[in-house]
Amino acid sequence: MIEHQEGSANFLANLSGKDKGPGKIKGVFYNPSMKFSRDLNVEFAKTLNFDGLFLDGMAASGIRGIRLALESNFNVDFCDTSKLAIETINDNLKLNNLTANVFHDDVQNVVKRKKYDWIDIDPFGTPAPYLNSIIEKFHSEGVKVLGTGTNEDKLSKLKKNFDDMITKKFDISKHDEIEKFVDNVCDELGGCPEILINNAGITKDNLSLRMSQLEWQQVIDINLTSTFLLCKFFLKKMIKNKSGKIINITSVVGHTGNVGQANYAASKSGIIGMSKSLALEYAKKNININCISPGFIKTNMTEKIDPKFKELILAKIPSNRLGEPSDVANVAAFLSSEMSNYITGETIHVNGGMYLG
Image (cartoon, one colour):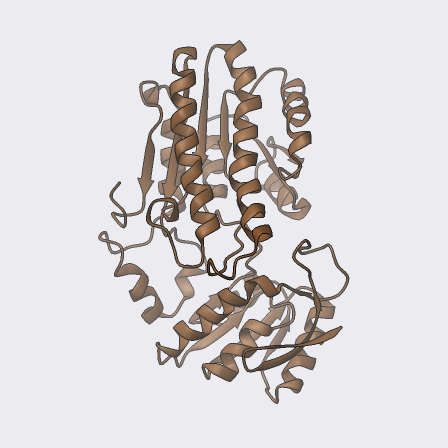
């Protein structure tokens, strides 16, 4: 373990390095590139006069919660499923002369036992809380679903929830393996899938003057280049079938921009432009290519956030509510159906009027 300092906090953790991520190092993970995100958390928290209870979920070293306790005077609980993380959090609390509840448990179990006003979840989770809802919608309509990802636990849970779903572990950042992966998928299914939904994405937030070329390139490579390659190699198969539907999940940030997300906004905006170009190229082949651009979507955790924080979000949304995961899933089902056969090259915004494109 290495001792670090960030903001007002001193803490112990292993340094990740810019080319590493969760699961690639031994010990408790610390990602210095997420300092900007934590800085924003702290500065925003100072404006709230927040007197509720905050949960730092999947806390690892506990740095986010510790900084909020020290710099914003938050009342913080911590949880993590790793025994080593729990030991490290307790050590780091002592290092900063703090006391707090630290639970060796999953976030979902902790929030069932105790009410929280604000919950922060591991930022390395998926940015798509609506994915399960999309799969559920397709499954209910008798569509055979194949899902891919890098997290074996999450793939196993999907398989348990949808017993006839096919899951495959695959890392889309390995660009030279995508074509072979597409071939293997088509061989296993006995033909090319009729529908492709590209949903994977990462963030590496930082102000543009602080953003490294690596932070820029990693987001572009996974969010944009991987999406392009998956479209390219599935298009070859769809052309032979003389039909197909491709849906690329973008983000409202691709239209509005966002502070600290020049790379992410560029990648999502790039997907929109790419999709329009592909739509023009393959419309005559009976292949429809469209985008869905979600705004703020409700999850189990958003129901437990501080009302003041929620008010700030809702103030930006004319419909005055968060979107339901089913709102995104219903659009995906529509764009995958025969009802959308004369729609291509479009982006459907699911944001309650937050952005009117």
